[in-house]
Length: 283
Length: 205
Image 1 (cartoon, rainbow over the protein chains, first blue to last red):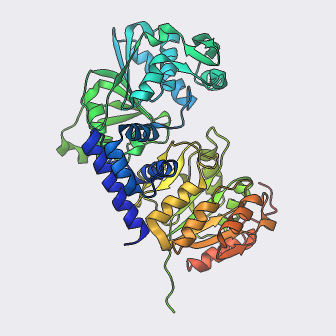
Image 2 (cartoon, each protein chain N blue to C red):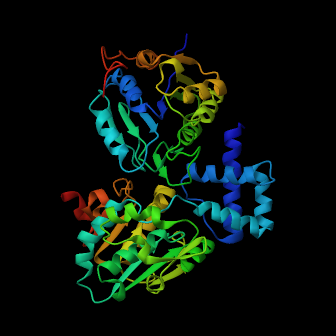
Image 3 (cartoon, each protein chain N blue to C red):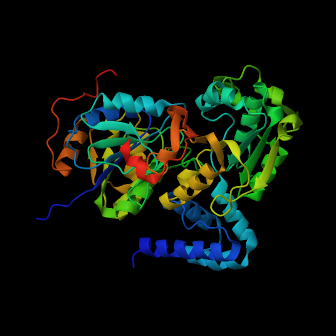
């Protein structure tokens, strides 16, 4: 057995242990990023091999918590991909305005920078007060940061993003300085419900008019992507919107026929009336 | 003698990379028999879309931004999108991630090289071009240790020599080649005719 097959076996074993012990299922995650995260944790631990991490994982829940945090650390910023926010503002908001109550689901909100970006946008367009945003993640530690809305970094560096996303004020109007940190203003937080939800395991919980699920599916293999997309489409109202990461695409999934390319560049999709399977090939 | 079959070419470039990529890819024919994956460090924004368009106009190969879930095709070049790591999965599909930067870089050359080494091992050809970074040297060493073929642009011909220098110091690559000759060498390795002429390194972009 060569090193690589050995490692592959160890990783499989580790993921089984995590699933059995904590119920988190990473077995259908795409392998490349997962392996790098496991190897990074190995290097930071006192373990010699990935297989040594198995028993540590089974008997030390703090070690699992560390791993869970590893799994949710990503590059994030406010108004990341401003073009997407501009398109939301100019093309999606006018359609949401027709509803008397609006439900938005931010699936995989991590530490919340993007969900606050969305709340700011809704506020500026006069929709925040009739909107409930559900911001969910599988990591309670990240959710806690998001819920508090306290960030250690200076958010002023996102002013350019904000303006490119169609913002007309100063981003600093939406937060207050608090020693070395900044805290998002309470009226934004009030409209957001932060809650635990695991996309790989949990179910539909409300009817949504808009779902933001950006750069989440890229971590899943094809089968899990299809499963989660099914969950998302079942959560959307007729003609509801789905926003993916700006380099993501439904092109290689089994879901293309259930969505229209509403704004292809911003990866904004719109749920179509579901066609019976037999008719798909005719057009 | 048995001729070794390689199934993919991976390239890492940083500062000065646009010109170097144009010179190298300009010599490769449209019939190039394997996919080419490229990590070019970028400054943010949508530079990678522009880079793909620009390079597409300069080579017989089809150049595009990589998309997750895509199976890379021979004769096509896939550029890492700005702000994403580009990875090759064991399934042979491309994937992207927004994990933290590696070597201060996202995309990172090491990430592409390591994942491609896992997926293809000895049937990989890797090339490190110009750059002012140490990114790529670890991944190149990994590829070499798996039996893949390793090429580095000679530092004297690089706009920024550090990245080739790091790679050479770390790996002892199979070939250290002046920029002008890389395209022709790749054509010999992949058993195709090089495109004549092409872009010279002195040309202005």
